[in-house]
Image (tube, rainbow, N blue to C red):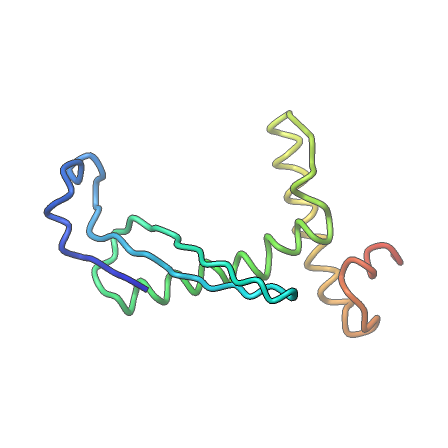
Length: 120
């Protein structure tokens, strides 16, 4: 991780209220076929310490991995073609409630949440 809280050089800093730092998360992904992918993710922050930045990045990806990934994998969320914003919001609420119920039943089924969903 790279963290820079000395951002006086940034000419548009005044346009972002509360901007204190810029952080970069460097991620190395090794695929099953052995291919290695390097990714850099940039964050503009109101954080002023590297420890807090690292914790915030880990918490962000914890949510991504535990919620958003399951919404996509279990419910094919990324393929949802609804255009009405109310429908999308309502469907997200129902999916999150359903995901919570599926997680509670996982101890009884001993299979993936996706399989539990299909069985129920």
